[in-house]
Structure formats: C-alpha cells, structure tokens
Image 1 (tube, rainbow, N blue to C red):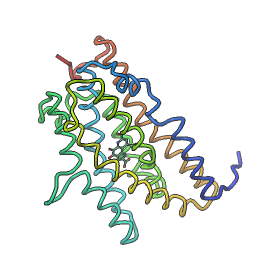
Image 2: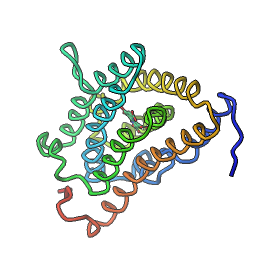
Image 3: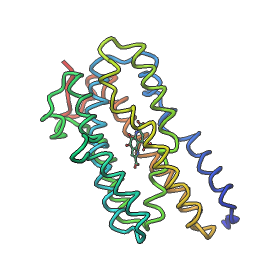
Image 4: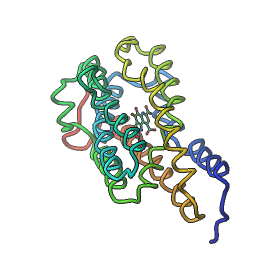
Length: 243
Ligand SMILES: O=C(O)c1cc(C(=O)O)c2c(n1)C(=O)C(=O)c1cc(C(=O)O)[nH]c1-2
C-alpha cells in the first residue's frame, strides 16, 4: 500500500493517535493500580520488574549516543544518560528507583540481580535494547517517543497510589518528580528530530511502527504482571513471590 507523505505536523498527530490508543496508560493493570485494587505484593512485583526497564534505559541511550553525528545531539543524549545514572553531584533515576523498591520492603541486591523478574519482563526489555541497537538512528530515536505520554501516566499513577495505599508515601515515589520535567524535555527533542528527519513516506511509516513497537514493549510488561500476579499459580518458576 502506498502511504501518502504527511506534513511534519500530520506525522505528529499520527504519533499522538498511536499513544492515545496503545500507551500503557490504557492497560487494565495500570487502572487497577490507580483505583487501589492491587495488593502490596502486586505493587512490589511491579516495582521489581520495572527496575529492569529503568536499568536498560541508559544502556539503550548509550547505543543512540554513539551514533549521534552532532555535538548538539550528543549533548542531549548524554544528559539523558546522566539523568538515569547520576553524576558526582546527584543520584540518578536508577538510584531513586531503588529507593522505591527498598521502601516497599525489597532487598536492594535482590532487585539489582533481576533474578525475581518475570521472563517476559526480561524479554521485553532486551528487545527494546536490541531494537535501538539494530535499527537506524531515526527509528531508535522514534522508539523513545512514548515519553510524550509519560507525564500523564505518571501524574495519574502518583495521585492514585498516594490516595489508595497506606504503604506508599510522597518520598517513596520521589523517582517520578524529576521525570515530570525531564520527560517533556526528552520528548521535545526527539519529536523535533523525528519530524525533521523522516523525509519520505516510508520513513514516516517506519517511525510510526517504532512507536507502536515501543508501546508493545510497555504493554507486554504489564500483561506479564497482570497474568502472573493475579493468580499465584501463574507465577513462573523463580519469579518473585510476595510474602
Ligand atoms: O512511568 C512510566 O510509565 C514511564 C514510561 C516511559 C515510557 O513511556 O517509555 C518512561 C519512563 N516512565 C521513565 O521514567 C523513563 O525514564 C523513560 C525513558 C524512556 C525512553 O524510552 O527513553 N521511557 C521512559
């Protein structure tokens, strides 16, 4: 099928439509979380599995950084890595995520080992890293565009969790506060890049499928949690068992 060439703004609209339909904000597990329907064990499992994603982000960003041809682009992508890994002055996002898992009663070393993560979590995260490593730079950058939609899900998550779970505090959710300013900065750069560099109809279609792929990564991680922790007998061998 021949797809027509879109203006950059039409491309942005098409990307936003994908987010509206496929972003993990629409997942039943997210709704259960924000409606106060999850047990502490399910929230522990979510935080433990999500650690794998957090830990992968600077790795995939390093693959992008290595291929960025401009100083401006490298500076931007280096900042993203520092946001997650931290520097001499401040702890990064991964460390802040570990504060959350620790506050939930999970042992730091156990979380970092990823031993208790679900197989699908590991496969999804690995496929994201591989995607970024193997695809052209344009698509690697496009796959980060789920961040266009993350401030909204983060706000609803934080609000819902603080309202419904007495074991969650503002402090334990501190990971998310800087994300509300970091993510718009990240996604503004990435969106601008994609709008400028997707210059054929085929490239535009590829950009859209990169975003669909990334939505699938996030969606499958919640599918796995939903399936495995709704019914204890669905737990794969070796996975974290809530006590
Ligand atoms: O809380 C969320 O639901 C959520 C989603 C996403 C996302 O949409 O990929 C990211 C984050 N958080 C996040 O904290 C983060 O640092 C991040 C980096 C990226 C990326 O692909 O480069 N996505 C996300």
